[in-house]
Image 1: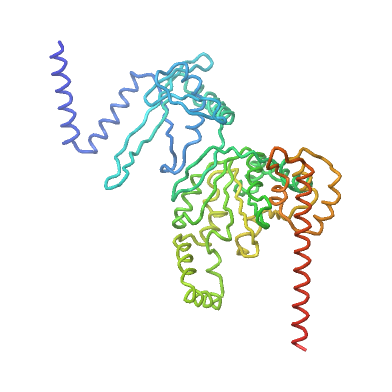
Image 2: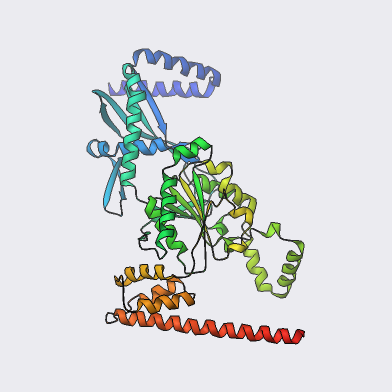
Length: 468
């Protein structure tokens, strides 16, 4: 019997190969079409396939992610082969079914089945690191008499529950770009607006603006704008721009995409990176005035000529400039990245630029509509100092606060410098020593500022006498 079965299978395979090889493609199409129709008369089940990627593999399907989250509990109890992932600050494990597994589900007394699978395409030839083109999918199977129940109520239920589970299990990430691709680590920065060294009124204004944006999906849809908002953070080094971004992400529960423009080859690659960012995220370009020469296209000819002369005199400057120009990202490409047609792919995204020198940026880059809110992070005032004292020393008041308040009005010092003096560096260092160290630093800075003012006044006086 086994030998007969083997002969039958061999014959069938031979006939199939002849059919594939010699029958015309159009004829094969007709046979497959009508065979499927014939099968539908005797096979009472309907199948729905949901692919992992949509739009020519540009974006991961949100429906696929929601179904994966929804099936996680069912998979852990039914599937024999599972995939595991750690979420929620490495404290919980989420299971999903492996490829080619099947689990059953029930909805309002109706039984249905979910199966996972993948299509494996051809590998890239002539590549140093061949990559197999794998396209995963979920397939839902149910009886055709329950079509209306499954297609409308059940699928809506699955998507709603899956998204809710995904939010609960979501592990926020910090991304960076390596050429045209993103890589990530777990985002665990502890900064909050409560610990941010800033005036309370200003903090509340920013927090209200952020929360209002995160709840404004219907508003942006009604006015016909992409659901995004731009923030420009500017101020001297050490004033807390990066900490502000971390506090924004923690307040809203967003991922962060730290975009390094010098690692982006051209505008096309920049657009690809934008498409691959997710919703509920902050896209950050830090020190944008240093990232690329984005204003060179608009500079007068005289400035370009002076720069060319400088390159001849200083070859090292020329080498550094040429290295920066290895990226072909243009100002036009960056503007389209911020608010062009492709910026509407996805939603609920913040775009944040930071700079130490806002005057160096092209006005077209930071106008309203691109950078909607400009936030200046300046030197440390007394309100910001009290926040730092509360953070580092758990103090709301002290006898030396009055003297520090007077000095902070006269001296420009960054919150980072103040925090360094409040940081206990030894176990025996008490708060009196920390505050005295800060006062000494403020007095030294005041003397240096007064000395600079005297030197400036003397130089101005001498120049006026020479003119006379």
